Image 1: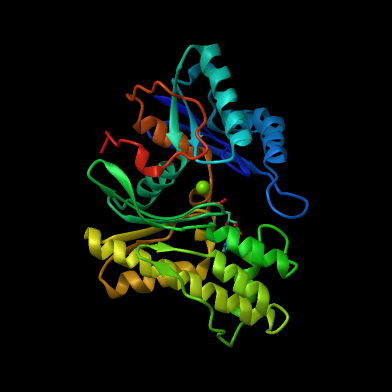
Image 2: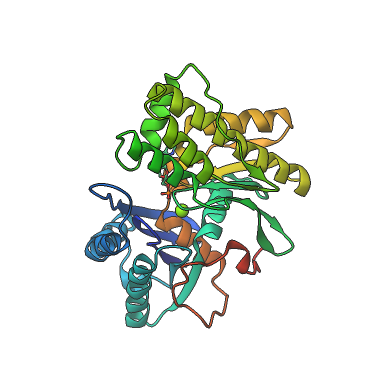
Length: 320
Ligand code: AMP
Ligand code: MG
């Protein structure tokens, strides 16, 4: 069975093609704003213009034609509405043209499913850290439950906003990571965990007020150490509470070496397993949508419209 999946929730337009659960192609292009953060309309235009090119690249790579695709899946949300609409419309057009079924996939669930597939960890806690999302998620009673999450901005957004103030272009995460390696002095920052949840906006304000008073390297170092420690605390609590013995980190921020190292240390200390996620599958991609669409192939869905605020725990998981 061939499944084609389209990802378009934010800056990435991705097309993945899988055959019986195995990835044949995973092509993408990422919109990069000239300055500042993502402008939803501009990102949607990027997807609209590049969509057909990425689609062709994926088909060529997989060596299949559109008429061979048995099922079309798309990222139904959460995400930016103008971007979601492009993915939905393209999927609908293709599925209607070839008279095939469509599956609407929750973007966060797709991150977990591809992580389970590529790491081989069957029942992990997932720390999902991206530009707009920060969640600690795990499987309980037929759903992916959000054990803890950010009460305000996503961690990537915190890094990007701080980066902008430091003169680092979007996305700032990689450069902050580089600078942090040269930081030597830890500056005490607010450490904000409220129950199971974390909050970053107070830290963002605090950091904005110390820029210029400390070395950039020390600020980046302190920021990473503080917010990553918060995420480790929430993840460890989820593992202990839900009796899970493995951790994966997904999302764009999962590219960070220091964060992964902390995950490994925490897991080693509790005799749990930690698997590093390859960048190709840690960030937004079409293969994760195709793969989750494949898992959901028997679902009957009456509402396929884009859902900007689609919650991870809103999806009933019937295939596990
Ligand atoms: P996503 O929304 O999942 O595509 O992730 C994008 C976010 O990941 C942006 O906020 C980036 O700044 C962040 N990011 C990318 N690479 C790194 C890195 N090496 N360390 C920290 N954050 C990163
Ligand atoms: Mg994502």
